[in-house]
Structure formats: C-alpha cells, structure tokens
Length: 216
Image (tube, rainbow, N blue to C red; front, side):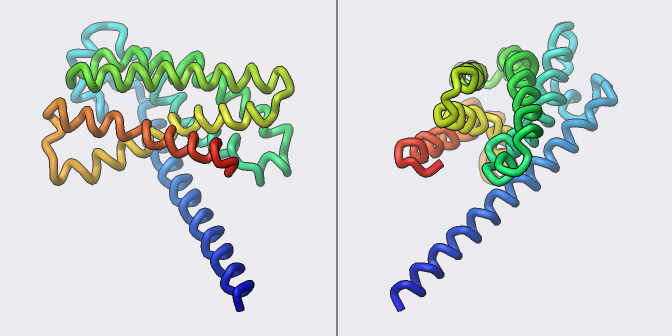
C-alpha cells in the first residue's frame, strides 16, 4: 500500500513537471513569434511606439533588435539546451544549438539588453536590476562555455541552467506585468522595480536551490 502511494506521488510529480515545462515552452514559443514580428523593422511598431524618444537617440534601435529578435530565438534554443531527453537523443544538434545560444547571448541579446536598460526610465532600482541581469546573463553563459571546453560537463550544465534562468525572465517579466497591471500602477517606479527584480531573481534562486540539493 505504501509503495503504491509512493509510486502515485512520483507519477503526479512527473506529470506536474511535464505540464509546467510544456506550459513554459508554449509561452516561450508565443513570445518568440511575437518577437519575430519586429522583422518588419518599423520603428513605430508595437512596443516601439512607446519608445520614440529612445528611437530618436539614434542607437537604441540596433540594440533593441539585437535583444528582441535574437533573444526570441535563444529562448527556444535554451529549452533544447537544458533538456536531458533531447541531449541524450540528438547530441550533435544539442551542440550546434548550444553554439547558437552562447553566440546569441554574448554578442546580441545580453549587450542589447544592457544598452536598453538605460532607456527604461523607471528609476535607479529598475536600472540596477536590468544592468545586473544583463551582466550576470553574460557572465553565466561565458562560464558555461568555458566549463564545457575543459570537459567539466556537470559544471557546464549548472552554469547553463543559471544562464537559462535569466533567459526565462523574458517570460516571467511579461507574466508579472500582465497580471499586476490590473492592480498596480506600473508607471510608478517602485511598482515597476518590484516587477523588474521579481522577473529574474526568483528564477536564479530556484536554480541555485536545485544545484545545492543536486536536483538538476
């Protein structure tokens, strides 16, 4: 009887885990599709309508497109990278996608996010949050690639999870904005600062908990 309950609990846990990751992937895919609509390169399209002062600065747009267009693609690439199921079956594809993920983060998405941080204009707390996120994103990805070059697969996996936790901030930020906008005035610096920090810090802390408890 006890063994049956244990097996049932394990089955429920596995089912919930698959549902959670499936939902995240669907949200990520939707976000990627939305990001790719900016391939029209219309400086007044979508979110850019709200950033006309930044666009007028002259150098905001290139970094915006680097962050949004490449970031949308590496979001999906990240799911492939952290999937043990995928890696065990298609190692060669895993490696090629890994190079794309690393190259995309280091040369496009992270630098783009870094520059965009200076145009958010929601106070110092928000600026520090996004600057720190971009810097850690770059650092974690750099360490991950250095570990795999040294043949340290376990450390590589851990650092890739840290990197991916910040990549997932693209999803969590929008979820928090969507749900909180009904109850809070996000034009207030303190409200947006809470959203900014919550979009990536809990993700990273959760991964650190997984690493500490050897649950990756």
